[in-house]
Amino acid sequence: MFTIKSPAGYVQQAGLCQQAGELIRPLAVHLRILTSPRAWQAVNPALSESLERAGIRWQLDYLSGECTDDNIARFQQRLLEQGAEGILAIGGGRVLDTAKAVNAALGDRVLIALPTLAATCAAWSPLAIVYNAAGGHLRSQPLDAMPALILVDSAVIAQSDVRYLRAGIVDALAKWYEFEPYQRHNPHQLALDVKVSAAWQAVEVFQRWGEVAVRDNQQQQVTQALEKVIEANIVLAGLANSVRGSLDTPGFAHVIHDTLTHQPELHDWLHGEKVGYSLLIQSLVANHNDRPDGTLLALLRHFRSPLRLPALQGDRAARLAQIAAGIHFPAASLDHLPFTITASALNEALLLTEAQDFGSH
Image (tube, rainbow, N blue to C red; front, side, top):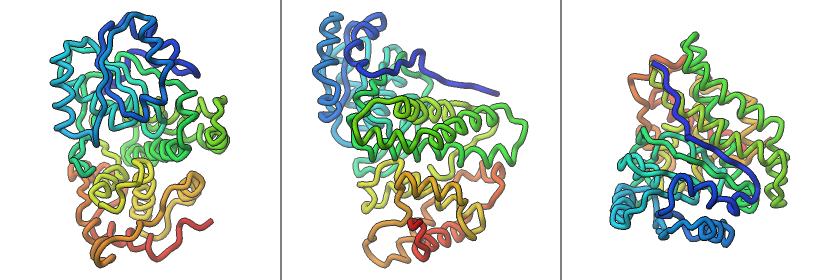
């Protein structure tokens, strides 16, 4: 078995919000827009003026909080009451995942995704990450329906806080470090070869363009470097996440990340920042808690991933042991990896990040 899920169309360029209406009109003329106040401000007035010029009717809905079952149900009900034929999702991962989940549940609407950040591959990835109201991970829900169109205005992303771009780089880096061990342990699997190839292309982009793109983002300039990194964060990482084969290959760092979302002290960490710390834990476990992969560690440092947990309430060692015990890697996939995952090895790795200053160059 081999499948690849992709959007029907992807367009990326500076100033795209000014053309959004003419691109959307062939797909839908009546939209329900899901966004956040900050994202809506980031795309306007250019977007709303473009929709009006194209004769597109729309109603606005702000997402409050996380992508939760309640928010998914609420937006779905409002969409049905309105009778809109299309969904326009504008914002970051929470907004995009909520809209994707509703689109997949209904199955008869058109979804257009307009990410305002390059912090994850959420616009492309065929998953909806569902949380509880407190921000704790509940499930990663596979989706059959994909966006009809992804619109990426690189000028909007250039205006965003560079922290989001760095987090997106680390989240995209994770795809290679998570999938390559499966490929090494299970050679000659076409799906794995394609996943790893796409993921490695992203790594090469970051090695060549990453530092310049971060600088350009800080200066709010759209450049070739920034365009390349946006593509890697959304398209290449999303593509790597979209390939499915006969082996179930969950990302180890993302499984660790899912447990970290339940720690209240980490709620101000971005998705990619939690993933970066989780990559360090993965590397320590894979290397029998000797030392992390040097290239990975250099990349995590370079893109400012947090490499030590913040202050934790209660006894710190007990909290670390609790986190380690809460990491549940799917048993069916354990044999597909070239290293062993145990709660004791995870706890030891967490303790190593306390004892050693991995954040120092």
